[in-house]
Length: 199
Image (cartoon, rainbow, N blue to C red):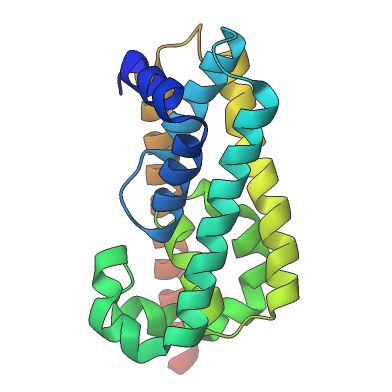
């Protein structure tokens, strides 16, 4: 992602660009959310962007995306996602697998799901589909969005200018791969225990 191009867009159209990029990323339209936030932090460090306005518009983009996805999940319902969910990564199988456990683990998913690509996009829809209590969802979304946005802005502010962006992206990918491997191993162990109990 070219810093100059992003800078030109933001300076031409204002901070609304930040809101739109992050909104798109949350609702499932492809956007490089983490690297974008890190780049914003780098711009802030170079005094090319205002810290408070960047943080505000980034937060608004995330929370607006989360509320929009929640609303679609809650009011459009499962039939809508059976037909169109594949476009945002919500297949029928994923919906069925996640809906049963969402109320049990929803708090942690909403608070920390933003850090996991894929889950970040699916979680708000699942909250709506499973009719997770709205006020609790709103509170958790506000806290989770603030922490997520500020953590990546701060990362960009303090280390983004010293470490090449490609290394940061590779680190994020490596973290995600490790997460998937751990999850797969736990699933295998669970199946092994179920087979053992069934004998």
